Image 1 (tube, one colour):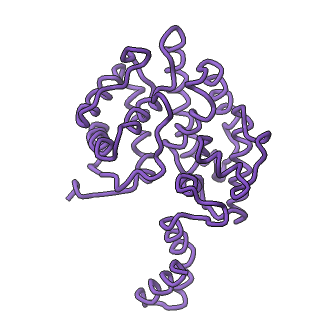
Image 2 (tube, helix red, strand yellow; image 1 turned 180 degrees about the horizontal axis):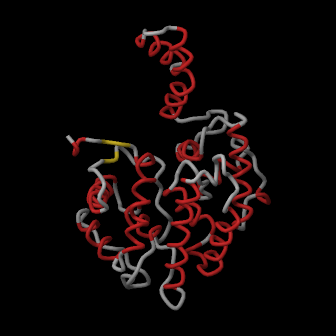
Image 3 (spheres, helix red, strand yellow; image 1 turned 120 degrees about the horizontal axis):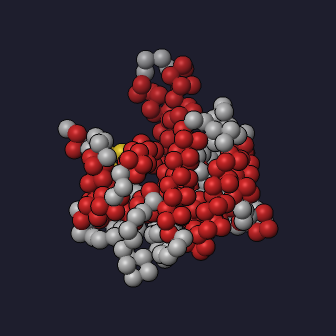
Length: 288
């Protein structure tokens, strides 16, 4: 039955956020949709400087749902949002690695800059989805459009002040395409900078959009060369959220996925037609 279909959030978010981007492009009352889905979680939009904003960008929309106080409330809100966007009734299994922004879920402030920032953030949301899905970030066409993306991020940082800082914007980017975008929020910074992590000096932590994309490119290259134990930024994010050191590597879930992805084809060639033996050999590696 459709209502029984379950999936991990990072597998469904690319489709969900693409639908949300399309909805936000076509609809001029995004707050009405937010109020509707939050109502299912017995919640209301958070106040922004003592008032509910008149408009909202897609990043802040998602952020309001992520910032709900517990998984039950998040589940109720997302369960209402998914069919509202015309998608099948999937349900998220868990929200591991889906960390809320600190202090306020909004990436903009009230006042004269509000409309400009909502427009810029909506533009970034669409560009980020298109670039990641087109392979321009980590696929065969990598590099195309990165300058434009960097310019848009830098404009947001310049306009937005603390609420649209580089760590907050990159954390929001990592929600919409978790496998493609590096987050610079606190747990990831700990993994990047600590001696038990990657040991990157504080002077090399990005302060601009161009530096951010440069670091992301370096880490992608290291992952492709198998110099890091992760396949993508989603696995790296989960390891950071679990406070794992570089030597400890992947979370248990990602270790299972990695073993099966890399070793199942090999074991199937060794033991053709014997799926039970293939599973046994995979589990032997996982349990080491």
